Each structure stands twice: as C-alpha cells, then as structure tokens.
Image (cartoon, rainbow, N blue to C red; front, side, top):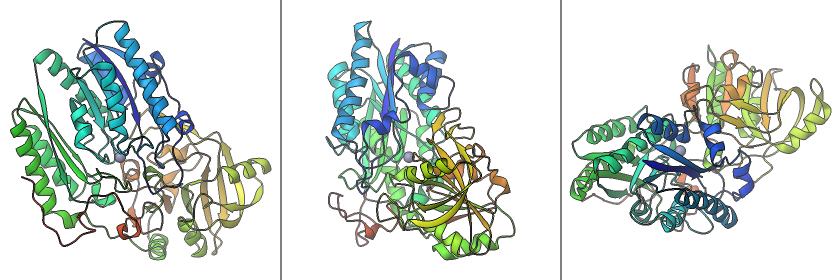
Amino acid sequence: MRVAIGGIAHESSTFATVPTKLSDFEEQGIPEGQQLIEVYGGTKSAMGGFIDAARDFSFDIVPTIYAHATPAGPVTAEATQTLTDWLCDGLRSALETGPLDGVLLALHGAMVSELDDDGERYILRAVREVVGPEMPVIVELDLHGNISENMVGLATVCVAYDEYPHTDTYERAYEMGLILAQIVRGGVKPTAAVVKIPLLAGGQRQYTHAEPMLSVKHLAHDIEGEPGIVNVSYLPGFFFADIEPTNFTIIVTADNNPEQAQEAAARIANYIWNRREDFKLNPTPVDQAVQKAMAAPDGPVVMADIGDNPGGGTPADGTVMLEALLRLGADNAVVVPIVDPESVQQAIAVGEGNSVQLKLGAKVDKFHGEPLDVAAKVARITNGTFVHKGPMGTGTTHKLGPTVVLEIESAGGGKVQVVTTTYRYQPTDLEVLRSQGIEPTDKQIIVVKSWVHYRAAFTPVAKQIIEVDTPGLTSPHLDRYDYKKLVRPIYPLDLEMTWKAL
Ligand SMILES: [Zn+2]
C-alpha cells in the first residue's frame, strides 16, 4: 500500500481587512517531500499522525507539501493557485513513480479563497483532476470548518477533530490512516451523509470539555461505536465567514449504507438543535473583568480577550485590555501577544534594559482600540522561536518573529508586561511566556488573545478564567456583522424559526 500525504490549511475571516498571501504561509515554512517528514516526524500534528499511521499499519508514504498560515482574511488567488499547484505537482510525481492506493490530506474546512468561497472545494477539485474520481482521498478537517455538500462529495471520508482546543489533530490523522487501510485492504465502502443545522454556535460554547459540546461529543462517540459507522464528525463552524456553507455541520460516514449515515446524522443534528439556546454567550465587560482579576486572592487569573483572537483572523494588536490594566492600576500582569512589528524594531533599536517611547498596538484597523502612548522598559529581546511543549501541537516549532517583552507602569505603580511580537500567534502554549523569561504561575493576571485554545495549556495553571467582552473582529455580538451570503433563517440571528432534520 502506497499513500500520498500533504495538506493546505487556513481559516479565513471574510470580515478581516488583511488578505492572506503566499508569504503568510511561507512565514511558518512550507516543507515538501522528504523535508516534510523531517519537520513533522515525531510531532503531535496531522503530518505526525499520518507518518505514525504509515509505520503502524504498514504502508509507504509519499510526502507532498504541508502549508498553513495564521487565520486572517481570504486567501489570495495567487496563494491558492500556487499552493494547490504545489500539492498537485507532488501527487503527480507520486503517481509517476508508482501506483497510489490513497491520499491523506490535512485541510481546514473554513478556508475562503478569492477563487472560491469554499477553498477546500477548490483544492479537492484540483486533487481529483490528478488522482481521478475513484482514488480514496481522506480529508482531515478542523471542527471550525464551514462545510459544503460539494466538498464532502469530493472526499471519500471526512474526519474532523473531536476536540476544541484541538488537542487531537494527531489522533484524528492517525485514525484516517486506519480508515484508509480498511478501505484499501478491508473492502470498506464509505457513504457519507451531511446535515447542515441552521445554527451559529457561540465560539466559547464550542469548548468540548464543558456543556453543551461535551454531550455532543459523547453522543457522537456513542454513534461512532454503532456497527457499520465509520466516522461521526460535528463541526460547529466559524461564523466570521460570510459564505453560504457557514453553520453547524454534521457529517456521518457509514460502510456502504447511506440510510444509516443519514439517520445517525439527523439524530445528532436534532439533539444539537434542541439545545440551541445553550450555545449563547455571556462574556464579562472589560473593566469589571479587570477589577475582578485584580481582586482575586490568588493568581494567575487568565482573561481571554475574545474580541481580538488571531485564531479567528484578527490582527492581535488590540489594546483594549492593556489600556484597562494600565488605567485601573493592575500589577504583576502580562498581555500576550500584542503584534506590532514597528514597536518591536523601535525597542530593539534602544536595546535591552533601556526605555522607549512607543505608540503601541491597534495599527492595522479601527476595530481593536487605539494605539497607546506608553513609556516602556525593554526587558527582553528574542528571535521569538519556541517549541510547543503543552497538549496542542506538541513538539512543533512556532515563530513569533523578533519579539520584545515590554514593561509598562500602571496607574497604581504596578507592572504590566507585554509580549510584543512581529508575527501573529494565538497563545496555546505556556512556552510563549516561558521562552520570554516569564513564568506564568508567578503572575496575578495573564491576558491571552484567544477564544478557547488557550484552555488546553492554561487551565491547569489558572486559578480563575474570565471571558472578556472586548470589541474586535471576533467579538461574539453577531448583530455587529453585516452578513449578506449567510443562508437565512439562522439561529440566533433569526429567533422565530423552526427546523428539524429529516
Ligand atoms: Zn479550529
């Protein structure tokens, strides 16, 4: 058995003002061929899962490319075309050197391209042109995928992450290797059913370790254990994409039994619809959150700046939380990150230990506060490269680009640190602080620009977690977004509606 592996992953916000270019993918490296094995072998990533599955289920792999970029605006036509060409070139040369039995791909599901609102459909159409309609092509999806039936139809099986934070990227990729072996050697004939639930699920309620998603996950696992079911995927989606497929999708794959797949998908969809009110959010106002964190007897109190989550395509340069910390006199606090390459260069120019006057943050757009006039001490300068040691992407390297730790005095004379970076990053690992000489467990307050992913690493050290109602392009106030392509009616934008699967 000989299997090609690769992937292109992006989550695109159609409300973000900055498009995603080829250079944004190149920022984190685009390993190809043998290099892909060298970069990802032994890591808890999608590619790491494919590589280990090949070893354990005895098949040979032919690596193509793997490209990913931090979420932002839609992917440019040039980037989409170039990356898809590179992936397809890899598949073509794999076919030239011998027969292929299948393809394992790590995509995302919420990529919007200038060439197609459904970026994964674009990629899979190109892949099908190379490998033909019969080749098993198994696709890994992020559970934030906005899924079209077209896209599912182009794949043989779709397998979405079960967890948010995405701690099971590796496990699902490994599972895909097993499913492929069952198709090629065991005669499994996948038949998929898709049910689209007209629901925009609040981002923080998509957390799979608390209700309502915990029960959704358990129900899906129970159904996956039923005889004849190959996979159950639930994708609450990413509602910052104003495109037709955006809503909550269920994909069930059965072995040669479309009716069974359809019935199971409808069962789980109706369960979710009946709990739709549980997916609403109630974040804490900014000043109230800061005062609560300052008054807490023990730290760290982790505050999630949910309006400026770079994982949802924001600039991650928002200053609203920092401004409140400084004004209200917080002490022993750290904000991670504020992306501001210009301030980083100014800080590097004065050097470690010196003071610098900055206009910090909020430079990309007008949605994430105002630039702050601050006098800061440059506490540390690094190249911003660190390895994930926590439960997400364990072993993979991330590059923040040139990075400085700034220390700013608050109104009460307290100290607020800011991890100021060149590239965007959603803090999913304690190493983002430790690599900068900051011990998270010593802090009273940690502000992270994230919705949910921080929880995997930060929950074990947090004495308290507060979701803060900050403004920004990932604010959960849906009425602030001007949706045009979204299929209506949809809950909770349209409250007076009924719906039922089957
Ligand atoms: Zn995701």
